[in-house]
Structures are given as structure tokens and as C-alpha cells.
Length: 147
Length: 147
DNA sequence: GGTAATTTATTGCACTTGCAACGATTATGG
DNA sequence: CCATAATCGTTGCAAGTGCAATAAATTACC
Image (cartoon, rainbow over all chains, first blue to last red; front, side, top):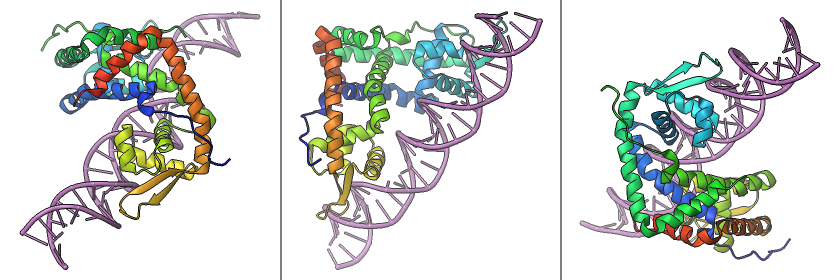
């Protein structure tokens, strides 16, 4: 094996890389603010959002709809509970399940976080402008595909 | 503060979230294979790619062009050196800098990895089909914009 | 009905990560 | 020149992560 010829390859055109960089940039924007002002991480934010519009939910439920490992959900929930933002109860009709729900404090937090997220989404949409539609179509192709 | 009304918010339409999910899905595809067959992680892969087409490079150089923290680069480089894929030398004209370069073994590795990456890129492009162009235009808007 | 198989959530472990602090080297400027 | 500042790469530390193993509860099946 002596100095094989390597194919041309440009990382900056490689879609997994480009997407990772773009995703990090978008997350970073809000995440830094959520972290510094509210002490909330991305996994915690996802759990909170899901609880905000679906009443009592199990860990399994969140895992499925929010694209996180169950252990990640579990630990995020533990942290949120310690902070007083959510309550964990046992579902009495199936005692394996939890019922997670926002506390009053949690709802108050979301009343502050959600407007920021909505404004951020608008910022991004404005930045994408006429490319927004095509961009979202591409996202659907990547994420949505069967299998 | 009693049960404030929360604004409507759908996480599955939130661009930072959608992008994160899509990015993870795309990375996962190759990363799993690189990891199981070659023992290479994503940070290591990025360093390797950069070395494959730019001869002798410093850690700082990679940090700048490959979107990773310098400590991440440093540790990836350490692992790659232990595995025998790259060599670290001191730049004698500025002894603070390193000169990273692929070893023969490293070039041989890349001769196997790069074709897989190229094929994967083609798969993704095929999946995106007519949405590819619009999707990339959106990516540029997100990543490219000044600041 | 009782045992085995499944499901749910948590946890132990090893590893990775980001951040700040650090030592080493080089640049700056009086 | 000498002291101060800036740059480069590494590392300590606390925290987060994925994965497998586990305990508790429920379901399935003979």
C-alpha cells in the first residue's frame, strides 16, 4: 500500500456535514439564550414543548415524538422536576407509565420561552425568504421518507 | 401566576428542530458504518478529510475550516495518531504549531472511506431529486450569511 | 392461574463534550 | 532588550451522552 490516489472530495459540499453545521448554527442561536437566561438545555426544551401542548404524557411518548433516546428524555425530565418545572406522577391505569405535566411554574416559564421561539422562527423564515419553500421540501424528503 | 395562556407552537414545524433531526439522520447513516467497520467517529472523519486534501495542517487550521472546537480537534487528532492514521510533527518555523499529516495507513484508510462518502452523497442527492437545488440554496442562506 | 415474554423508565459505565485554565512559544511595543 | 500581550495546543473538570443492564409492571400464552 503505497500512497494510493484519493478521490476528489470537498467536505463543504458534503450534505451530512453542511446540514450538521447549519443545524448547530440554528440551535445555538436560541439555545445559548435559553441556557444563560433560563438554565434550560435543548433536551429539556423539547420535553417542555411537548408537555405544553399535550397534557399528560409518558416518557415513551416523548421519546417517540421528539426524536430523543428514552434515557435522554428521562434525565431531562429529572432535571426539569428538580427545577420545579414539571411534575412526575405514576399513571394508575398502567403503573409502568409516568404522567409528566407542567407545573404552574413550568407554564409560566413556557409563557416566556414560546414567544422567543416563535420570533426566532420568524427570523429564520425571513432569512430564508424565497428559498424557504424549497428548503422545507428538501427537509421533508430527508426526514419524511418511509424507512 | 396562574395558568397563563400559552401560544400555539408546533415543534415539528420548528426549523431548528427539523434541521437537527434531519442532520442527525444523515450523519447516522454513514457514521454508524464508519464506526462499526473502521472505528472512526465523526470528528475523526472530519479531521481525516481535511488532511486528505490539504497536506500539512495545524489544529487551528482545522478548527477554522471544519467547524469544530480546538479541543475537539486536538482529541480527535490524538486518537487518530494512536491508531496510526496521522502523524503529528512540530512546525519548526513556529514551534507553537503542529503539522498534521496522513500516514500511509491513513491514506489507505481514506482510499476506502471516501468512495463510501461519495456514494452516500449520491444517494442523498437522488433522494432529494428535484428538491436538491432549492434545499442547497436554503442551506446557503442559513450558513453562508455574514454573521 | 402461573410462568415466560414484553414494555417502561431508570441507572451504571465508559466515553465524549465544552469551557476555562494552563504551559509553551512567538509577537508587540516601549 | 525586556516585559507584556497574544497565539497554539493540551488538559482538568464537571456535565451530558449512548448503550446495555436492570427493576417494576403488564401482557401473552399454555
